[in-house]
Image 1 (spheres, rainbow, N blue to C red):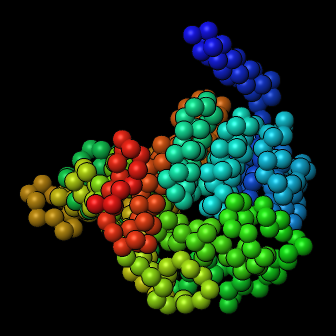
Image 2: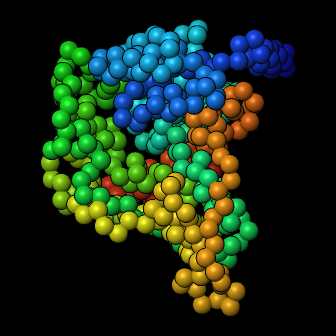
Image 3: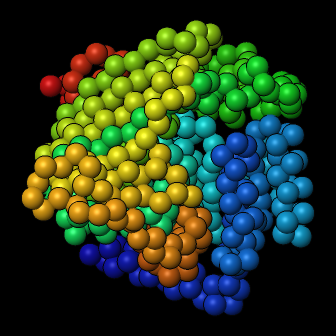
Length: 409
């Protein structure tokens, strides 16, 4: 008991000390780790004044991106941040209160755990995890700490998403039957760099910390295509069913209030873009949730037609406008034969909603739970990891919450 009282007292003093620091200097100091295509540094610059933050450090394994990040902070914020290719150096700086992780998927959990150990608050990109072992390790580390963690599933912070959530909570669609997204495109997102329309210079071995990038993956000679187009390689990212679908699945969880699927099946393959990449260019994933409805996700690369996102209920349908934050999400009675079906066009409310990054910073100040907490990251990771297992193994899976395990059925 004495040890527990000492631990609790130390934790309380830490929290109180942190509050006093904010009182004396209310700018929160942030390190951006991973300065590439996810553009989280741009998000930080966009909220730097309203959120009262200072970017004190930047980290990237590619020298040119690291130099560009320093220049961006200097131009838009007026200070020159520390720069390093090694993320632990950034995390352990005394002038860093929070870290923003925008790195390849295989690095997320390791960096999250290390940031928590360093005592930092964390914004971490999606998908949170690529397998259950690293997911459980990261989740438990966060839950044992008092740090704020925000997962980068920013669709939760769309005003339309909050409006849809409130509409569904009031049973605006009646009984939920199905939620569905089709997200197609002509060329895969992992070919953005080095593809037929890319005009920039490829990375050179002398400019890249290749071993830091690999982070525990099998050692291999430097490969500019794997480094630049890591989204297309299953060592670093598993494909559209884990990278694109995670936005949709997380938003579906948020708006409907469900957590884990009871059944998942998946099909997919490479049908159009047959190249060195080993992730599928087309996938179909179907879930059943214990609350009594189905969820379907589809991506096809090779033809960009037929994109939509819809919620179906007994009283009508919500068309979420391809999940665009710039369009109205609308409920109608389309498809319903019920006497009480939706009688007219209803636009989803759009309540004032802070930017996803600003929500993270505000939660550090107030202790409030962020809109995409670690629990949300755990749930979306279970869904996408189960989909990947179903696709690779050709079997149907379920999630056992007591065992925290994805099991074949």
